[in-house]
Length: 175
Image (cartoon, rainbow, N blue to C red):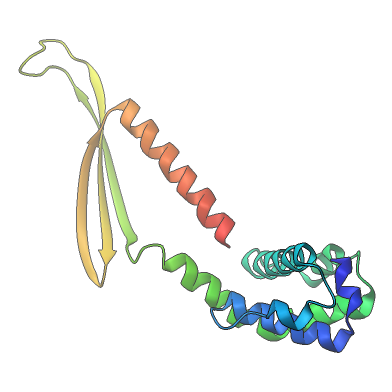
């Protein structure tokens, strides 16, 4: 982030607004506008750091003091410039992050119900004694409520839980 010190605080504000524009789906800053200031590698690193900072600050609702602590390697005027843009565009960044997360799928879980059953036997095996989980999900997709019912063995339930935990990690990273 110390590379921000190569431009004036006023230009830093302009750059940060353009970074937020890119984060919100509009035109991001152009490399050609800053080619004399930073190398390609420095430029890409700076964009990643600023974008990550805006996502983290808004997605995790980090207080100003922690944002300033993350900007400790730049001088105070540049840190204040970044913070000014963050405060001014906070709601816009939040909406963009929510839209990006919601864009993954339009389906949302409305309700769920579960029952634990013990299968004592089947038509092929006289003594089974296998626990089964009956899981009912009410999923809203495009305004319509769609019930989904599944019966899972212990192994299938473990696989489902692992998959949901992995999906949750991905969603958390998008914030």
